[in-house]
Length: 197
Image (cartoon, rainbow, N blue to C red; front, side, top):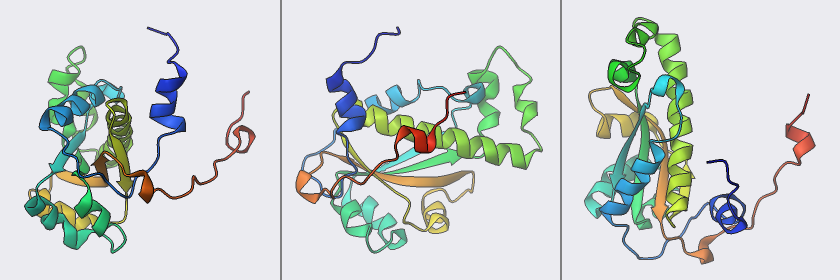
């Protein structure tokens, strides 16, 4: 289980993967979205908390519901994308811990009445799952366009009106059109961001 991925796989997941802004008019089947989620959910989270929640907007009517809450720069590309995914997190994730973390039936009590720990846990682990989601999508041949330019409160009111789930970020997915890519932006060198002690 520790075999290194080949160079082609690393290119697809990381070195040649890009943030897409333009999209081919090619449908993403529901079965592929299910496969993405089924891969994503296998990534680790603390106490298997699994707080991420997803809403996939495919129809024009569904996309029109999010349009007013997207920044002017992000609206056109989200409307054109085959799928606009809202990546959120369940603020009451701990209610599921007896099922998801069965070897410690007291895990739920770690979070009950502790809003600071709840917020830290959902944001950290929900973001981890959002990253797993993008890697799973890339692994299945999809392209991604993650975005943070949107009105969280508006999206939450429209799509999560009971207040339990909160939006984290939006990620367009589909089959990217290379014509819409920007030049690759620079990255830090190892020594600028990492230390080995």
